[in-house]
Image 1: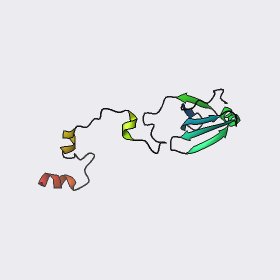
Image 2: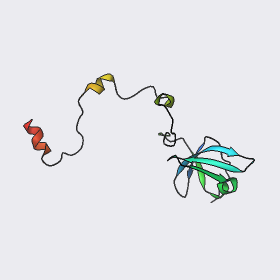
Image 3: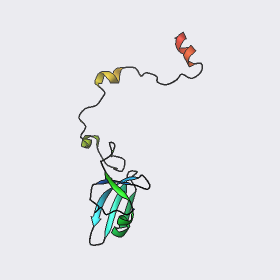
Image 4: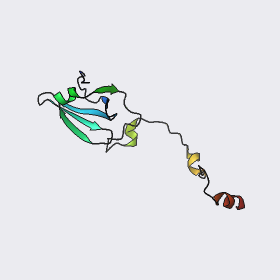
Length: 110
């Protein structure tokens, strides 16, 4: 199912056949090429004719969109709140999950 969508720079898309997420990083209309960056960071350049031959849909930016970005600073993400407070950092760590055989007895002895 070919797409009639025109590629839009900085728009995220999903390849319908493969399920891969990517966004368009550049569009060169003179050369007739589209540059994509996949979520894993791989870059790909394709002809505009190839773009129209694949089945894609525009999607919202993924929640963790930093996958393909190499040089992003945490301050650039726009997060102002975290779930941890300074008191949380001073609390002892809690073990999670099922205890390994013998560990439960060791904990009782302590």
